[in-house]
Image (cartoon, helix red, strand yellow):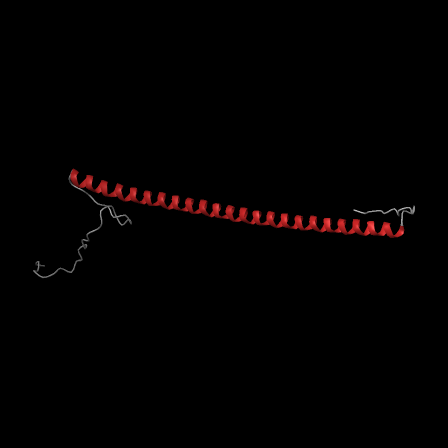
Length: 131
């Protein structure tokens, strides 16, 4: 058989352009001169530095926020404790005032009662207090 000028019936392997380094997810870049390599390295390091810096700033902001919340919590607790102490002091003062009034009433009633009954010798009744 003589060769024909038309397309052959045999399939030739299709040539595809593939990414350098295979089908990996990372886009690999090949450089040919030192200037391109240095610019590529500087861009990579600057992006990594920017990411690290952003992480650091986020961390600092979170720490400051937690410190301020702790300080607010302490101030709130101290305010509450001061208010409680003031309320306790007011309650103590009112109780002391009531006791003074009772004593003064009792002493005035005892004095008037002794004047009415005279100085008769009457034994006092014994009282027992339970705690």
